[in-house]
Length: 324
Ligand SMILES: Cc1cc2nc3c(=O)[nH]c(=O)nc-3n(C[C@H](O)[C@H](O)[C@H](O)COP(=O)(O)O)c2cc1C
Image 1 (cartoon, helix red, strand yellow):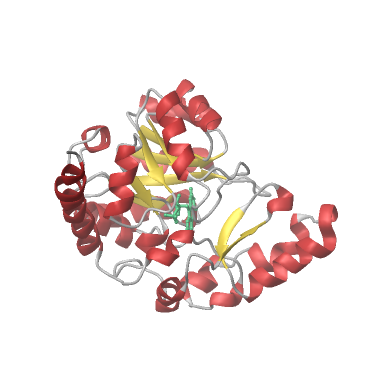
Image 2: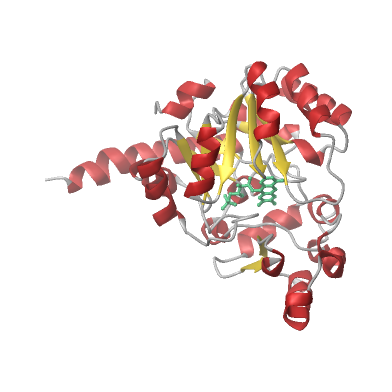
């Protein structure tokens, strides 16, 4: 397949692996890029810009294909050293940056001057249009189904993608709920130039997370995610577990009085315990509804090859045969 995304990024297949905290290490990014997709290292999982420099160097050792770095601008008590992380990206020779969370405008001049292409992740048409105006190159349109932060509008991709297609001039990829060839072909039909997957890539051989996490995704159905932190307008879609139940109880009990301080035990510093130690109930962790479509743990190469070959069959056999 040749789309605006494969051309812009110099990749073989229109499939991106979204940044994921404590999942998007060099091993996964390199495996996705080696399989012909676009792998992405999660910048802030690296504790300092120096650590990110080392992680980028490790990834270069594992692949000679293009890969990107995710920079997430979420509400935090003390802002990370974003200019330092941007130095690490530029000096490390990475030229594709996935931004997410707040408007990345203040950081764009440096990134663009260095020749970086920016994919900004947006959960609404209005944010996508803003990102286009400030000079982002690609939008990752992230529907309500997605694992992680779906925003506050709750518009699923069946509506959001065609709305984005109607409004945007720059290319976009479909993100949230993407798992297989059907996701890819449907997204292309709705105007996207490719897909971005998070949860699906966690259940792969190369994802450097504890096997408990992969097995939990396999066991989960589409009914097993919950939305937390809605009262704080920082909604996150997570896999249900004991910590999620505790957090939702607090949300119900405290109502409008809920503050982030009340839920620190469930949300702060929990990712290493979950992703690395496999302690699944240690806190809340992002997971998409798409868990209901995930039933195996292939290599990234097997996954991407399967999506591409089944997509071709879907288009050339099923879709063409319907047109009489
Ligand atoms: C465990 C996990 C951690 C994530 N961490 C981040 C993150 O740090 N920054 C970010 O921009 N997106 C993050 N995401 C969102 C993904 O990049 C992607 O947009 C999302 O997973 C797409 O939805 P899907 O899971 O249905 O494929 C995370 C998602 C998951 C499942």
